[in-house]
Structures are given as structure tokens and as C-alpha cells.
Image (tube, rainbow, N blue to C red; front, side, top):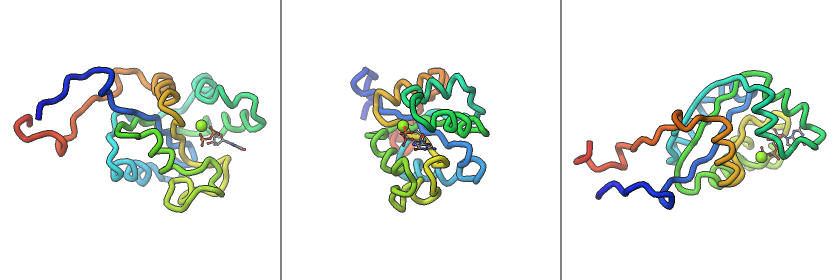
Length: 161
Ligand code: GDP
Ligand code: MG
């Protein structure tokens, strides 16, 4: 087949996933990445960083009136994060399902939160909650030059290799 010309309509869906400081401390990075790879999504951006208050207050601007807001920002800046962009069909909604309910007590077994956490204040992982939200979050955390548009070999015909 011929590689389709890129146009806005066939740009693949992307989402922002962040492993929170408790996930990094508990050495869950490998297992979490494995779940997204195994499901069939494509990693297009990855970095580890200690988040500033500025980026976190922008990231969580919708929650600034919540009583847990200041403790949330302290938690999220308490250690390094692993921030990623994953791409694929329906990746925003499927990632939310893979991550599980915000409150780990309500998260199904088999989800990241349901398998690895017990309390909402230490729930291991972030996933964007809508396609528009994902676009905003990806722009906040990544420069476009750091997102790689690469072809999976197993989805490319050998004549192109
Ligand atoms: P998410 O999209 O599932 O991460 O949930 P929200 O966007 O509603 O909240 C963002 C994050 O704030 C959650 O993942 C939790 O880390 C934290 N959070 C949400 N609700 C509570 C709460 O009631 N108490 C505390 N301590 N943290 C909360
Ligand atoms: Mg949210």
C-alpha cells in the first residue's frame, strides 16, 4: 500500500500519560509502559522531569478551587515524573479505561490504579480525559519537535524498508 498523504483528517489521536512521583518511587515505570505497548499504542514522546509549580498549576487549572488542590501540587512536585505521549486509535478513551477510576477504591482490578494503588491522593498515573484536553496537555508538556512521527516496522510493507 502507499503511505497516505498526511492531512488533518488522518492525524492519529494522541494522549498525555504521566507516571506520578509515587509511581516512579515504586519502580512502576516499566510495568506501566509495558501495558501501553502491549495494548498496541505507539510511544511518540517520553521524558523524565521534576515539574515546576507553573506547569502543574496550568495542568490542573480546572481544579484550583478544590480543597485538595495545594496538596495535589505538592504531591505532583514531590519527585520526578515520567511524561509520555501515546498515539493510536481511540487512545484517549482507551487509556482512561486502562488507568481506571480516579479513586483507586473504585478502580477495577486490571486497571493501573486498580492494580497498584489504594488512595486518591497517591493514584500513580495521569491520563488526559478528552481529545481536546489531550491536545492542550501535550502542548503544555512537550515541544512539537520532541514528538516523533515514526513508522512501526510491523505496520510497514517490506518494500519500504
Ligand atoms: P483524574 O483525571 O482521574 O486524574 O482525576 P481529576 O482530574 O478529577 O483529579 C486530578 C487528580 O487530583 C487525581 O488524579 C488525584 O491525584 C487528585 N484528586 C482528585 N480528587 C481528589 C481528592 O478528593 N483528594 C485528593 N487528595 N486528591 C484528589
Ligand atoms: Mg483529570
